[in-house]
Image (cartoon, rainbow, N blue to C red; front, side, top):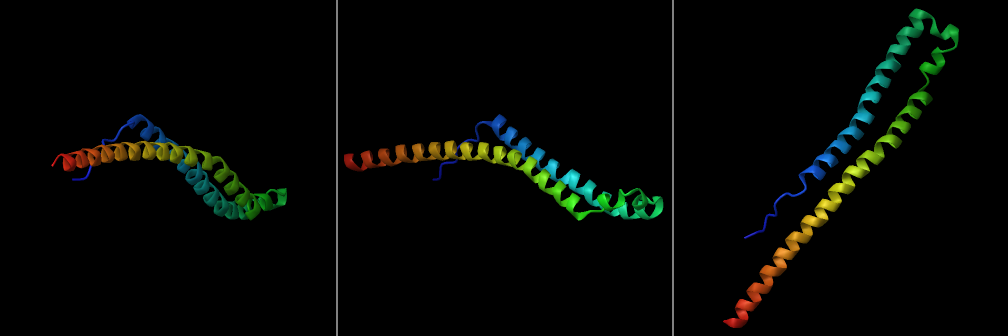
Length: 116
């Protein structure tokens, strides 16, 4: 018979989930906008003449997109890390409860064997 501990600390689990969701949104939404904007920039540069203003090269620069992606990941990593840190602490606590239960059960079995 395996001990299945109850899931405790639902609020902390929710906070962890929200932190990971925020980190995902921080990365995904601006990335989609950057990619769409990058390809829309080609069209706009040709139709509006943005290159004549000197802005087209900046809009279409892969370096600008790469720097945006790097900044997004730098911002998003702490959210992911905090969410995962909460889950690590919860897993340690759950493991301690299982170990305490198994230890108590083993000591009871040993005491029963000594009596027999």
